[in-house]
Image 1 (spheres, rainbow, N blue to C red):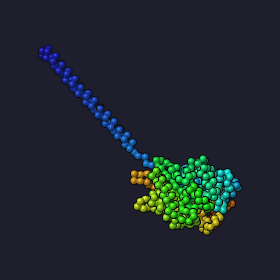
Image 2: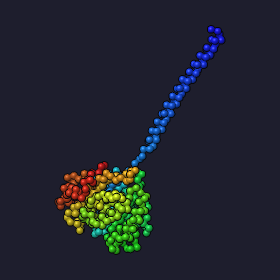
Image 3: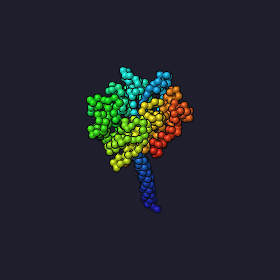
Image 4: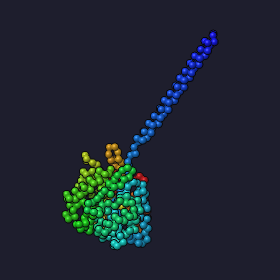
Length: 412
């Protein structure tokens, strides 16, 4: 082979090797690039999936009845009972939820009012206000038949107390005639709750020019639910309905010392259901009344007709039979979940538990005892035990009044 051919072969071979190597490394580069792109796309997809995971707005509510402080409790405090002891067994129920709701049946003294827990005229000292505020409540209704026991000053004093000494939203009273309810909203876990509160009237009548200061659902002059008062309530509901996810109305209604729901309660239930109210929490009976679902084509409403006394221990109850004096010692706590779904509002997991107002044979050591903690020792030492107030009676009332679907114990 000539030297020129030899040189040419070397050049050609070298060129081929270079081309081959370029192709090989190009392949590697493309392979690597494709895999890097693939990995990036997979990571990006995972990130997008994570971003698209929705946090479902959900809240847990705890409901209780009347905070009705009466003379026997005040007498026990004067004799040496310890204020914190009374709520010691129920605090855990209020600390494990998102919103707790009750009815403040007594006005709070401003330092100038007569303290009283008898004769249908109730006014509690500020120490009681602090006791209630310590429970981690979020909402209290001030609209009830004792809201005028110390006149306008009593309502203003109560509202001012909770505003200045707690995070409690007090509803059912108004400062101006336009009845502004825009502040009756609590937002929690991405859910907005609205609250309204009404009473049938007051023990001490309110003068006409001050009736706007209290949520009334019927005309005090004729004792009927007329078009004027329906229009006022409708206006309140409409002012909140589109601004909240869940609308709750607190009602002081019905007859005392009976398990039966009257026609007025049913009328108002249907009225609020048609307006789109989600939950109605009733009180005033001073014993428990049924829980019902009102399911119509337009809306579903959960109704608690009465939760009974949360606070309210007295062995003499004028106007009540011996049977209902015993029932007076039983209140009801309820816990439920409210969830905002793509299909609408879901209210479920409704659970309940009786709470017994315990006081011993000396009418001392007042204590609220959840039924799960109501031992034989509490049972036989209750002041009312000798009058037939025992666990058998409590079971009888609970099973008779509350439908089985709601007789599920609260989970803590």
